[in-house]
Picture (tube, rainbow, N blue to C red):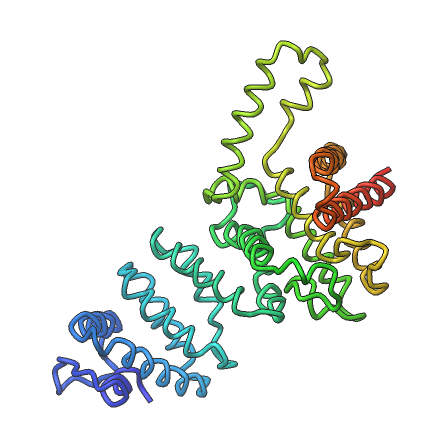
Length: 366
């Protein structure tokens, strides 16, 4: 089989090529140009063309001698830099062939992140994030691939590829989305319904927790969030800058240590501290006396890995932030009328969970 013949027969594309020329001698660029023209002139049939093209490629992949031709075909699409067409074809093929064992769709996703224009990168990244969301409790199958995209921990930030950076960013975006969609009634439920803690078992639970923490605490994470313009990071950064400016202009703060603490505040540490706090609550619920016994080794491992992957200044900041957080709950509890017993108890319980987190982490961080 040949891709030219296949396009004529399988896609029903009318190739305006000299009939006296052997299809095998046609320049591949000519094929790309013709496909491009067909997609633009037959917009209503684009989906059908993509499906047929995917079926053709699936069939070709069954023949070892044709697999390289498929690779060259898709690679040439990216080289052409007509990214609207590239996205249409490559993402369409990836979607159609995601279960074909011979087709490595993630390889082509990675190629588009590294080589596409900004619009292509944004669309591909959103597709990848959407795939993670739709993976549900099987999200680690996707993460196992994405972890191979992570940059070496000792690699200079300036040498990161864009797929390196997007792999770092994705875990933050995914975790926050999963938290936002997580129901309050499911906090403390075991087995957990939170995707990153679901499907943990004796064989893989500790390895998955280790992967999760090392990913979030990757030394290049903050750089990637800054460089890619992560929304939450920059919103917090602006708020923190204003907060620090106001504090530093406060003449009542004259203690050198307090001034240093204010100057050393980092947005990324706030994100990490709050994520760890929320994860602890998801695992334990809001009543630590009723924590499921199977949660304890997982929760302990989570905090142990946070200690191992953080430096002393981060650990000190986490403890301070959690202590401040429980203090805020104390203030709120005082404002709640005794008549509002349910609300008052809910705040008391949440404060206890934060205190338990603070206590356990402090013991590990010594």
